[in-house]
Length: 241
Figure (cartoon, rainbow, N blue to C red):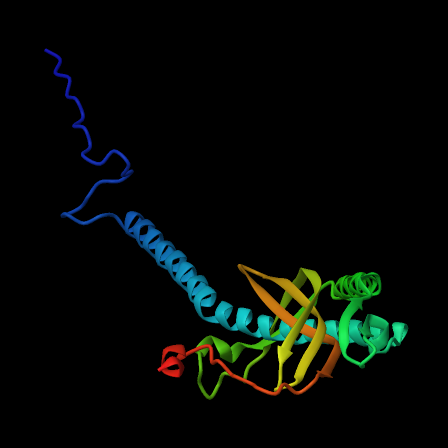
């Protein structure tokens, strides 16, 4: 009589060796430890990069915005200075006042063509200067990773590339404001709005800069009235009482 014994099925088929006294073999223990170690290392790397993104990137964005703001103001000032030097026009070139026989101003005319030409030249010069700043390098000390501490300015520098690009719009405005009983202040100015987009690794931000260029600022004198009543914008009911 021939008896055939079947080998019992392993409870853990992925094990290549037998379990002795309830303990895994040495090779399996090493494999398990390697997997755990790899998982811990990967988790540490993820947490480290999240920490860099939360702590360092805030500093990078803040410093980048400050640098781009300074750069934008410099670009605008240079464009304005060059344009005004090229035109070298006085107040009479931008506006003409018309008077009657008594010497009283009855109307005025603004040289809109000249002002629009200045606007176009300012925009062209600003865009041309922005193109010169292809890529800026921002150096940040490694100590910034520790936050605001005594070591924030120490350590090797981390070089971060920032890419500024943006748009600029200009518009001229005019206003008449009473400055006295018989005086009116006439003002004409160009308003320059510049929006810069700062692109840094893992983040981006916008910087808005606004400047005004005064072209005309003149006080016009008129005849002193015999009676004068000043009605305030607020507290009108108190005046009536």
